[in-house]
Every structure is written in C-alpha cells, then in structure tokens.
Length: 287
Picture 1 (cartoon, rainbow, N blue to C red):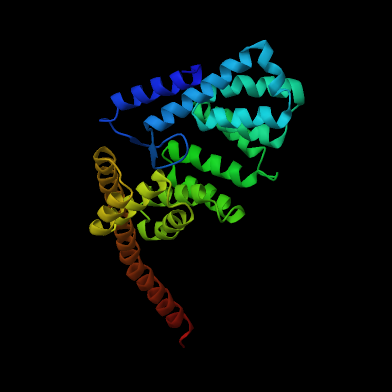
Picture 2 (picture 1 turned 180 degrees about the vertical axis):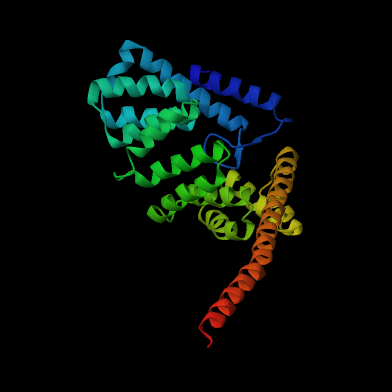
C-alpha cells in the first residue's frame, strides 16, 4: 500500500470512530448554518497533508514553481481546513510571485478561519472594489454572523448576492442569517434558491430542512432528511436548530408587537395635541 493509501485508510478509520458523534456542526468553517465533518472529509485532509509534506521536500518543490499550481494547492489546503498552514504558504507565494487579488482573498479567508477577525475584515474591505468583491462581501457576512450580528450579516450577504446571484453558498448563508434574525419568510427565497442550485450539498440540504421545520413543515423536512440519507445525529442537530430559529421568530414578532403598541399609544396623544393646538389657533383668530 502506498503512503497516500495508508493515510487515507487511517483517516477513514478515525472517521469510523466518530461516526456516532455529531457529523454536522453549527457555524462550520465553510459558511453559516450546518456543516459536515465526515470520514471522507478526514480522508481528504490526509491527502492535503501529504501534499504539504511534498512541499517540504526539496526534490518536490520544483513541481510547485508554477503560479497556478501553487495557488491551487493553497486553495485546496483551505478546502480541507488547513488554514494555519495556508497562511505560511500564502507568505511564501507572495515572496516568490507577489500579491494578487486571489491571494489576498485566500489570506482574508485564512485570517477569518484562524480567529483574526479584525485583520480579516480589513483584508476583505480592501477587496470590495476588485473583481473579488462578491466573495469579499461574503466573507464580511460570515464574520458578522459568527459574531452574532445577523442584521449586519444580512446586509453584507445581500451585497454579495447582488454581485453573484447564482452562488449557492452565498444564498444559503443569507438564508441562514435571515433565519437567525427571525425573518423566516424572508429567508425562504435564498434558502430554496441554494437548494435548487446545489441540492447535493449536505449543508444546504440541512439548512433547507431547518427552514421547513421552523415553518411547521415537519413532514416535508423529514422526507428531505430521509432522501438525503442524513444520519440521526444530523437530524437531531437540525431539529434543535429549528427550535432556535422558531424562538428567534417569536422574539422578533414580540418586539414588533411591543413597538407597534408604543406607536399606537403615542398616536392618539399626538393627534389630541394637534387638535388642541388647532382649536387654540381658531380661538385666537375668532373676533
């Protein structure tokens, strides 16, 4: 068996040991909402680590002297969750080839995923006037969502969808941010758009199931989860998330009713004051 094969086998074995745990986690690194962490993902991470080992071998470095190959490898590292390692290679790439908008975006994503929020936000802001603007606004939305500021997340993600209306991941994250803000019905369009654009994505399917369940469509949500063959741990996470969304919807409705009551209570007083003022004016001009 090759080294790569042994690594994949080991990763698969590790994945089997966690199969009974929660396979979908909230707020995964790839976006807002529910994300997957399967044995296949662990195997893919092993592949990426093998590629990194090759980079450290002087005899293999020549293979990555090409700009396109090297930046592609950095992107793959990030897809497999190796954000800390990617930062080191981003520095190496910049020293060798210089900075490009794509490299700056990769750096911003890595900064975000390694918890360096201020630096990530600054890096994204520097990209909003480039051809990477949609992904920059997406990153800003993810930062805001992770910080619990879903109103700002919605604002940033709407900018992203305007620039890239066919991105399933952006639509999915916008839908989730709207749900967390209690805007369940507003979330329907982006959630369903994401589902139809990329219905094979487990995270997108999970968020669609959350929306259906929070909207009272439990039978449809259950059928979707069964069709997607989601494990019970994932279904439990979806049910729990739907309950949280339902509470957010109730809180928003309660806040609206409270604000409406205050306005309604103030309005008669204002009208009464206006009538009194008008009566005073009329009395003043009467002979």
